[in-house]
Length: 66
Image (tube, rainbow, N blue to C red):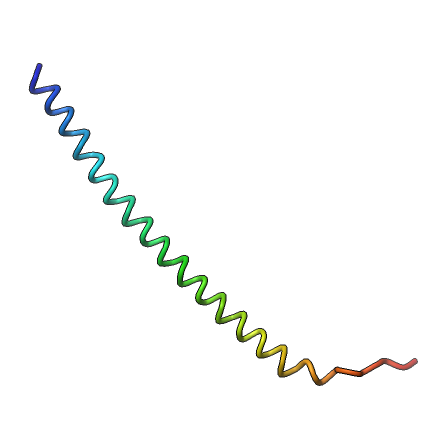
């Protein structure tokens, strides 16, 4: 009976350690993907701002007459 209790106790500890290793790896992977997406978003926002600055002056002051 004591072996069962000790085995159960150590089994729980090993299961928790393995679970924490797997989950921490997944969390690190998600954080890395999040940083990549934020970097890509910032790059696209810079490109959009550049595009708006380049083409905004073409129609400034243009008023449609009827």
